Length: 401
Image 1: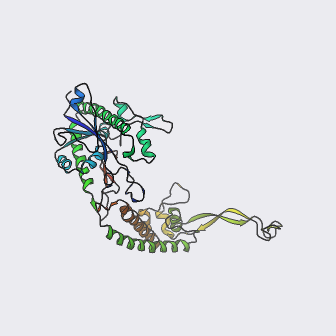
Image 2: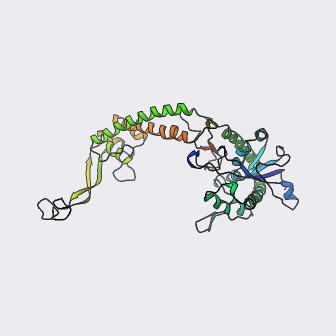
């Protein structure tokens, strides 16, 4: 069965997005200014068809001729990562307007009916080195490689410092395995009549990759000012919830504890560990007779129950929904609104401000790229059971007004 003209590519990049200046949690993040393409590997389909497969590599960015020719299907494993590095070159962003791609990770997700999420090229092993899940390479007839390079990275070594011959061998192995996977996937997809679906999904992947590259604008200065206002409102709501908890006699109140909020609203028993006398006052062993503790009451840690009368009052029996934990009731938004009393609404307000602060101000600030003055959220095409697009770091599909 005829194959389209294709080129398989893979990049090895810097892993310098670490330490105090790191943004997000990805060391090889393509938006970190000091990260760069350290080595590129590729192969063309005519090299495979000639019977003498040839993997070519070069230090730094790709140098092959005709790289921007849109007649070639550009193939890669998790190709979005590679494209975000290549898009630093304006020619690649121009190529993307008419280019075609094949991501073996996303295609595997489609071929398996959304069951294989984030399929890896290599085998997954446990701490003893035993294979616990096959990767795409061995599934389709390739060879799983011993990941010595990952060991260098885990030890904190920069990619630039890894011996070139070892990095070259590692890269060649990835390119060779990716080509084997692609050729097998293509034949399966064609036999199943899935090529039109895959082509449309690859177009969508190109679109969301461009969206990631462009980023999501964030006025970090304004965000900081608003965050201080939100923090003040949160502290005021927290103060009120603490007051409500003390009103009903909750020991060591924690306004962010669902168990204690259940107690405050619906009542129950709070058990605390407290030092209590081991004997009654008239017992001869009530106090220490000698030593450093002479005259002190003998005590030990004891479970002490405290009865709490909830603030929901008569409403409790109508709106209290038990949880799996005995004596504890649900305190989600639905239940708090159903109670509707000031103590319940205070909890709602506290949670709203706490979420805004953690997710939309502190959280966004950690994902802000000062050099780009924006966030580069991540879109995933292979994360859900339904095929639905998802987003993270931050979730750009769920930003409140």
